[in-house]
Image 1: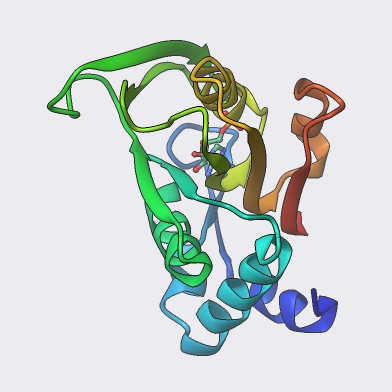
Image 2: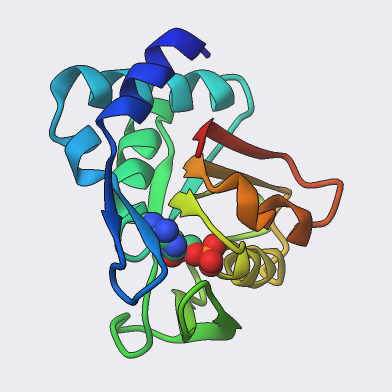
Length: 177
Ligand code: AMP
């Protein structure tokens, strides 16, 4: 990964204080997605991380994880699987509830979306406490794929979200706040 280029991406992420609730410093990545150069840098950096790993499915977490997840899947020649809020997926699902930086939530995935032959990257835009991704990881793991990787565009160092994952899981993030 080219650190200098990723610093450029970081510099165009917009900070919104007190959104969606007081006390949260919300990292608005839409300002990085809309910047053609930043979008290209992020895409290249994600693809570089997983290029030789035989990835067959990228799982994107609703909603902001759909953007980078779909882009990454395309670059890797993998399929894309949405992980969604309850009641949105039309076929049979499995689900998991979890706590996040602000509030609690539930995520669902189609039962037939992942098979034991799959090598999976789970992608979300941002790692805060890690609650969302840990739930996603446990849900995907319960489907017994060959391997599961975890990827974020960025992470919030102060919240130590990386500590919630088992030590043997490879967790990557392009840059840190
Ligand atoms: P967590 O489960 O605490 O790691 O929260 C991660 C999820 O919530 C991601 O899907 C993020 O999009 C969103 N999120 C949490 N905190 C923030 C923040 N400070 N800025 C932007 N997104 C956030």
